[in-house]
Amino acid sequence: MAKVIHSIILFSSIFVLCKSECQIPKVIQNSWFSWENGRQTMTEFNAEVMRRTGLGELRCINIQEENKINFTLVLRHDRENCYYCSKLMVRTVNVLEKIESVCVTLQPNELPTVENVCRSLYKHQHIITLFSENPVPVNCRSSVEGVFHFAYQNRFRFTGECNHPDAHIRSCQQAGSQFLITNQKFNITYRKCEGMSGTFEAFVEYSCLGDWFVDKNHFFAVANTKESRKEEKYRCFLKNRDDDLFIGVSITAECNTLKTVEKSPERMRVTPVKAEVVEPGCRLPQNFSGEWINTANLDAEVRINETHIEEKWFPDEGRYRRTIYICRETRDSRYMMARLTVDGCQKDYICFDFVPRHHNIIRYRKGIAVIKDDFHTVCSWKQFNKQKAWKYDLFLSKNPVPVRCPVAGKFNFTQRGDIPFETRILGGVTLSPRPNTYCKENISDFSACDTDQKEILVDETYCLSVDHLGRPVDIYSDQCPMHFDDGENPWVVSENYIKIFDFFRDNSKAVSTRNQIQLTIASFILLLVANRVIYS
Image (tube, rainbow, N blue to C red; front, side, top):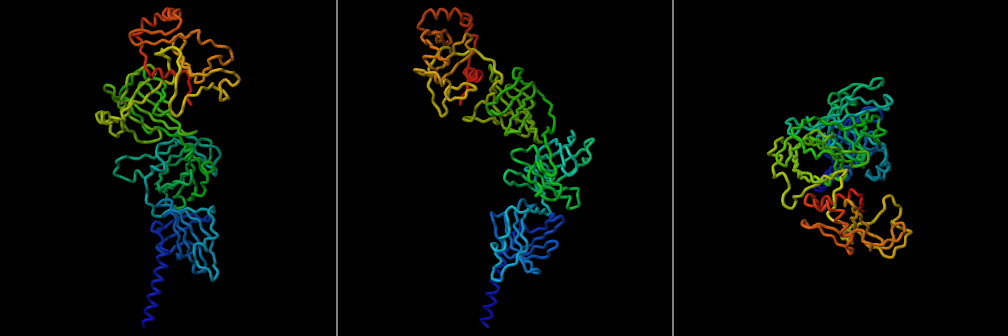
């Protein structure tokens, strides 16, 4: 009797061990739809068994987990006495992808392990997409966000591209909406193009099922909310990180047809458009109008008119982003601006604190963006960074007008820092600007010697004996006396007193009006940019 009890206990422990080894994860336990071999396929998973159209019931024998999102299952087909290997990749809570082997018959001495059954499984074989029949909608923001005009082409319907001005994609979040479902849908409006058979008019509303990345390819799956036919309900979209102005669309319930955006069955060329128009309520200073360079975003092109600031930059070749600021209200030096991003739906408000324009420079500070349209909230001094973080960014004129330099003469200079200045000739092909000219001694030279005193020449390897053409140069002729103004008296330093009289005679007007000339370090730096002094 004791032996019988011992055998029963041993058998039950082995049974529990096998059961725990092949417990199908809960994220997979669901009913799924897929399009396989040209026909609809229904697949259902529970904790131990998979049931599929045309195959019947397959029992899980072994399972292997990778990174908690990839699962390799060994499934036994009792009727055929063989084993299937199915690798499932969890893309979202609503989408699975799988690769599967044929039914494998093992030798009598072989165990149904993953290594033995999955030997015929290849990494690059045909991928099948499974869509949840009971989907849980997710937020669309990570999939597609904004309002876009699009032109589309379908390789199986018509040739060419249908570009209609009223064709739009609209995916907008409603902040604070009590109906969460509104942020889980987007719609596409198709328009028919005249003279192009195969184009059509339709309004399609999609519910987002989630998105995932494979290398640089960005996939997202959707379900048509107005479609009852399962083969027409599910679709896949494909974007690319390097070129997000094109979108590929599947025309069947499959993602494997989307290899690249260019070779997709249907392709959309999208252009972001403004979601709404905001009326200006104030004016910017008149001398702000023009084109500028933003030191806070050097890649940006900034255009300012009386009521708008438009900032456009290029994160990559063929891609651009644009932000528009509209003047809404102003008090003292603060301007409350409505911010519109062209490829988004929401508008928010941000405060600019401007310092009056000085020569070719506008100094400004920018506050924190808020959603409320209220000047006291947006432009509160608390919205600006304080203490050590307090700093002004600069708008530099793209086409600056030179101003008079605060110093004149020839100077030596020393350099400190990680990237020292190097003399280069624009368009030159050699490292040395004078490869065939012999020079006895090279020095650093900083010269402001022109008559108007509006140009500075910087040469890190200035030759004392010859010029760039090899002609002798006499630097002791003192053609460039040093001059500076301490605010009360003009000073000229020269070994030749005749040059001093010549200087005061030629610059008498400038000396008499010295108190009317405002020279700043900022304008001095800008002159270096205007005269194309290149720093490497």
